[in-house]
Amino acid sequence: MPELRELYQQVIVDHNRNPRHRGRPAHHTHEAAGDNPLCGDRITVFVDVEGGVIRDIGFEGAGCAISTASASLMTSAVVGKPVAEAERLFTAFHSMVVDPAAPADPRALGKLAAFAGVRGFPARVKCANLAWHTLHAALRADGERVSTE
Ligand code: FES
Image (cartoon, rainbow, N blue to C red; front, side, top):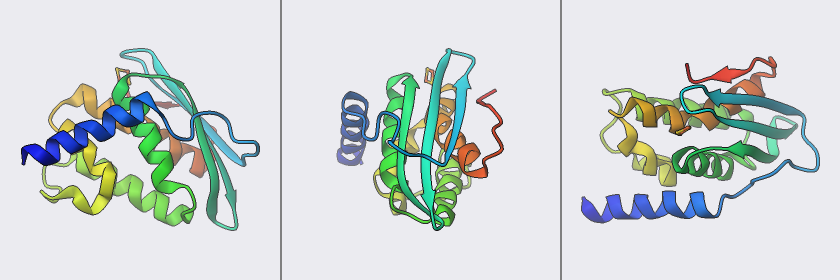
């Protein structure tokens, strides 16, 4: 489906050039830092949780186009959602990019499906997963630094 591939590419380019939710929110209850030691890219995710719902979210850091676009799309996907839904998306996204047995049609994930193409490229999988693993750590609030290695 070349049109779909083209659309997904445009989504990634757009979110890399114009990342949503970049920066530290005015108030946050959770945060975690993550890095990819292979390239040195790093990210910090800040989450403001109230009543079990992600009221606000932001990220800081420097990364490649895929990690920046993934952080932007991740923050857009989870803001306003219950924490349990964000964790469900984390699991579904992770499975889409690493699991060869994951459903062939990832469109149920909406724009997040733009990253389905990284499956099979381990270095790119780490780029796409960095923000999600860091969000997961922030929500667990265990203060542990996340690494893709
Ligand atoms: Fe560093 Fe993508 S090359 S996270």
